[in-house]
Amino acid sequence: MFDVYPVYPIEVTHGKQCWIWDNKGNRYLDFYGGHAVISIGHAHPHFTKSIAAQLDKLPFYSNSIINNLQQKLADLLGELSGLENHRLFLVNSGAEANENALKLASFHNGRSKVVSFTSGFHGRTSAAAHVTDSKTIAAPINQGFENDQFHFGDRESVRKALGKGDVSSVIIEGIQGVGGIHCADAEFLSFLRSECTATGTILILDEIQSGYGRSGHFFSFQKNEQLQPDIVSMAKGMGNGFPIGGILIAPHFESKYGLLGTTFGGNHLACAAGIAVLEVIAKENLIENAAVIGGRIKNALEQALPEFEVRGEGLMIGLECDKPVADLRKQLLFEEHLFVGSSSNKNVLRLLPPLNIGEQEADECISKLIKVLRN
Image 1: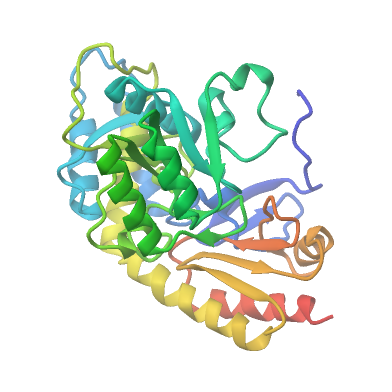
Image 2: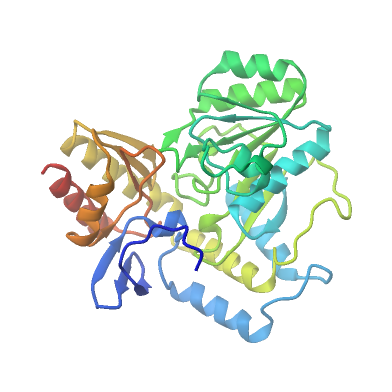
């Protein structure tokens, strides 16, 4: 293997709901979900049955034939997200979703400049790597267009940049995940919508980590009930571990043959996974559960650990400590058997559990965090 991943000496063999087991029989409480990917829990029976049933029929064929599962997925996604006037293009990952979002914006207005935000993360491939705030993942070949990066809330700089009339798109995460759980407030998102509309700039909401109910809304930007992005990018929790991503595209974009394309995106097995996830989210009221249980965790941590800053919405929570958290993560993992995440801010722990956790699992996580962080 090409050695690019620092790994813990743990081999996970199976999981159930919010629990995973290693090859030695140890059980771990999963409050990271493999980078926020596990949305409806490990090995959810409806999910596994749906995948198995489709696997027995037809796992894959190309987009050159009718695939009614794509339409079923699009209809259900529109219904649950409230973006029924948007159209769906399916891909395989979050980076690919953002690549297509940026490309479609550039096709639409003929521009190439992009505005993004500090601490933002949008992917590791071509254009997505360039608009990500990380010097380590962008090779020289990724830097083929102009990109201005501003801080969240910097209205003056954004207005000045967009006023020049040469910006193709603004891309922003509703809640920054890798950057350390920083939430874009509703007023700033409204400001971006207004400025983008006035200047012919495309507004892209990156909901790859914060979407699919994790924030307590279907998409995190929907805390602003009136906001309508031009493009919404999705992935991670969309397939509960099966590779699938997509973009939701507003009606004013013209579609034509050859504009976008993918070999594997929207294949039969991926659609079966995506449909199953949405069905479980709806049937088990997981968006409401994320809001309630997330509020319980956040409130408990704020009260018990007032010296730390607790940020986030729903089940996307960041805990900023007064020192790097690498050793704390190891202690939580190896002594408390609790998986949590890190961020590009070395002082921030991330909590991204499956959306179907209950009060008991939440309280167990809270107890383990308080035990370790108070020592």
